[in-house]
Image (tube, rainbow, N blue to C red):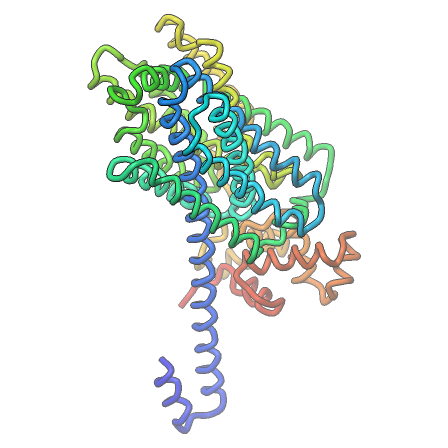
Length: 508
C-alpha cells in the first residue's frame, strides 16, 4: 500500500490528486486503528468477564468439594448456601464502598484490595482441617468473591450498556469460563484450577488499576439524563418488575437445584456429580439469550426467557433412573444459563439509568442467590411433585404478568430506523431533530450525551460555554465528550461533524 502511494506521488499528477490519495491513505489508516481499538475493547471485556466467571465457579466448587473431608453432610449443605448469601452480600458491599469512598485513588485501590483478601483466603483453605477455621475462611473467600463480582458487573454494565454487542460479550465470556472449568476438572484436577483462577483474576484487576481505561472507575458515573420525578418513578417500576421476574425464575428452578445439590453431598460427588458433562449445556442457555439480546436492543430477550422457563415448568426431574437424571440435568443447565443471561443483560442495561449502577448492575445475581437460599431453607423441594408443578405454573403466570406490565412483551412495535443507503428523498424528509435522534440511537448515546452532541454539532461554543449552558462542570462535560467520541469512533469535533454528515449515506 505504501509503495503504491509513493509511486502515485512521484507521477506528474496535479496537487488535488495527491491530496486525495493522501487523504484516502489517512482515512484507511484511521479506520484500521479504530477497528483495532474496537476489537481490543470487546476482547478485553470478554476475557475480563470470563476470568471472573471462572473464578466464581472454580472457587465455589473447590470450597464444596474440599469440605467433604472436613465437615459432615449437614454442614456441607449449609455452608454451600451460606456462601451464596455471602457472595450476594459482597456485591452489595462493593456498592457501599464506592458510596463511602469518594477519593479517586482510594476507589482505584478498591479494585486490588478485595482481590488480595480473596487470594489469601482461598490459599489458606488448602491447609485447614478444622471445621470452624475452614468455614470462616470459606465465608471470607465467598464474601470477597462477591465484592469482586460487584466490581466486574459494574464495569460490564457501564462499558456495554446500550451497545449492540453486550449479549455476545457476556455469552462468549461465560461460555469460555464454563468450558475451561470443565476441561480442568476432567483432565487435571480442581486443585489446579485455583492457582489459574487466582493468577488470571489478580492480573485483570491489576491491569484495571494501573491503566484505568474508564474515568468512572475512580469518579462518580455520569448522569444518564436529567433528573425528574416521572423518570425516577418509571425506573423504580422497571426495577421492581425485573426483581419479581428473577424471583419467579428462581422458584421455577429451585426444585432442580436443591435436589441435585443434596444428591451431590449425599454421594460425595461420586454417583451424582453436579459438575459433570451436563454442565456444558449451560453454554446453550448463555448463547441463546446472549445472541438474541443483541437483536433490537434486547427486545426479544423476555419472550425467549419465557419460552425456556416453560420447558422448566413441565419437566420435573426423574430420580428413579440415572439416564433420566442426566437428561434433566441437561435441561436444567440450559434453563439456568438462560436465566443468568436474562438477568445479567436486563440489569446491566438498566443500571446506568438508576444513578446507582454499582448496586443495580449485579442485583440480578444478588436476588437470585438470596432467593435460592431462602427457598432451600424453606424445603420447597420436599413438597409433593404435583404441588411443586402447581407452584411452578403459578410462578410462570407471575412471570408473564410482570413482563407484560413492564411493556417487555410488546414485540410487535415498530421503531424508526435510518437505514444504510437511505434514498436522498427519504433522508431529506427527516427534520434535524429526527436525524440527530437517530444518529444518537445508532451509536448508543444516552439522553444526556445526546444533549451534549447537539451542542457540539449545532453551535460553535467552546467547552466552558457548553458546560455553562448545560449547568454542569467543565470536567463532567469533558467526560461526556470523551464518551461521545468513543461511541461514535471519532477523535475530534471535526471528525464528529464528518461522522454525522455521512450518517445514512450510501457507501460507494
